[in-house]
Length: 319
Image (cartoon, rainbow, N blue to C red; front, side, top):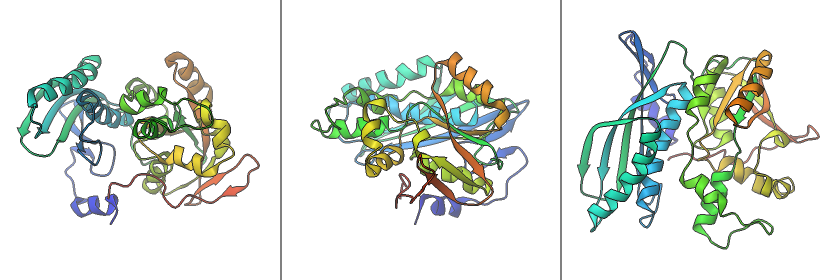
């Protein structure tokens, strides 16, 4: 059973009017007085999301980063956090201090206040509930319209390369040293400012946590549309591009590996110049990779416009 099927068990599909965005998006949005409260929660568990030997500082940073990325995809700004921490380490105090260092590094950047939580003894598990705010203009996975451009921020596949290098010091592609990508995997940068800017002209948005293809598919299903994307347009790290251009398996590994935490969004063609100016202003690479179509399928084409079969696995499914 897939993650979506399991989520649907809990989805009553009947919500009171103050719930503007219910279950099924990167976060939920609730009308709260004259403001909109945005709420998300993510969990990280030992031997599923990280090894027992992982640096606690990395865990502390990343556990908050993945939640912030969810709010960025909604066009919201993070404000408050709740933290639930379960730990069975012998040296609890030292582990927690290092975890706090990573957590604080990112919370300080966005002035996020930790307002409560819970602590327990057991296998390491971290759950964070993050609260943010947005005005009446916010982003969702639905509402992609036929003819719109599909855009992606940053480079896709950096986290996959970092993960592979981190777990195998001998891993390399060609003669390239890939150590620089370990930082991209361990310390992703949530695109908060970008999310706040693009909500002025974007129809849909999602953060790329589970792989570009799988997360794009989620937009398509929510919007009941299809998409054509172009292999040569997808922004791949320069160090490996000449290899991935000749090796479709490597290419698919890069775009389905997940944990890039970039933003994937759609927008009317008339905003192309505005998006490119925003890219220059924020110094964030923004790339047009395809178009929303009337058909209900996800299709990929090579540089010669030849259709390529989709990989068996589009990305990371949690179950």
